[in-house]
Image: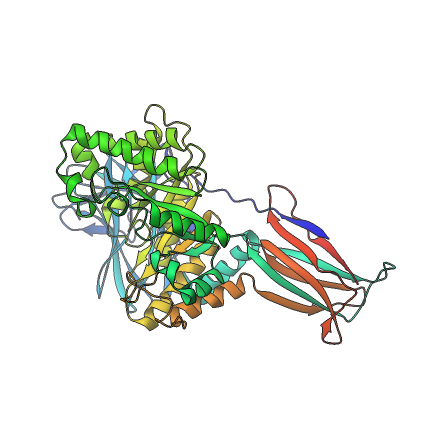
Length: 559
């Protein structure tokens, strides 16, 4: 017996990359910001740095302007009091007098400067700056704006800063998971005559979690049974740590060897584990084979084209994703050889070679660090659009890859960044999740990051970057060398249990048992007197999201 359970959740997101004629109202009515719409002149606003500020009005819209700015931080400011153990979401609408200029929101606190977010602002329209922050200690703070271009005026309106307690934030995550990742299912136990069975136990066992949640692996898994057993009992998606990279498959020019990734792919297929292709080209000059570095531009172009054709043809149709040009916001090795459109050209070649597999950008610090301007959400979207707008790339199947190498997570900034990125309307994956720090911190922060990602409706998959080796992992392991869980591994098991695992409950007088189940595949059995009813066949149940439905479905199990 099998029933597909349908789930509907409508999620829409404002396109934060749009520049609008008029700003929207401030979120949360401004939160703790005083005079957020500048309706009371410059009340609560003052000058920061070497600049002048004034109150202006245009077509009934009032705003504050910083002009005659003699240093980057010359702007308007407002003094606030921020509390430790609170999470602050921030937004503001920003315009500049000329050009396309990056404007940052900064909070000066007792323990240092906190960058809440940034946006590329334009003249004659308003752009939304969205971000967030937490603080290390409670105390006084001052919000201000900055831009390295001191010749422009900065206009600001509809400012909002909303605090949430940790309990409130977690509650929102749980509600979002319930709306977007789960469905309520009523299971009815019946005898062969169709009569309901009351007071019997329904056993529900998840066979697969539909949400792609996995971990990187490396070639050590091919020869280590303990590693294999630990890994395959948990994960259904993976990325090869190094084995598909160019320097691994063609260490010497013309001598291409795919034997290791071939074997790893065969292992993954045997265990029903989907594989992301990582990576075709790496834009970091540090990770090039010596022979690649020595090539002339013409020879380099030939070699790159051959690399794209070789690996993508070999694994075409066998992977769920390709990281095509890795880290091309922070680095520009291929651009230095082939010109500024190099990434766009390579994605064009990739699309022609394997047009049915999603082609990802893959970058770090877009959601991890608010202070890294090179890979800000705005810069990421700009690069994505640049690639998509290149002739021949209009219909590429693109995706957003966020490496997610965290130190101390800033969850409000992470969520705000995802809001911005989601406006691109392409799949978003966290591709290399790990945390730097001591084991206790790693586990605590890993759980926070994974919960935030899983609760975000537009996140389509998560891969943890903890491939095992005897010498240790890249930054974070999940087990020791005997494959006993570390605290981080316990977090993974805890969340896998929450998002699936097994469940049992007793039917009511009408034979019904109701449960919230994560999207996935389940087996259902009737248990009577502590043992499975021998007359009851195992019933298969699939809980799947769809664009229609929204009803609690009934699934019947016959004893």
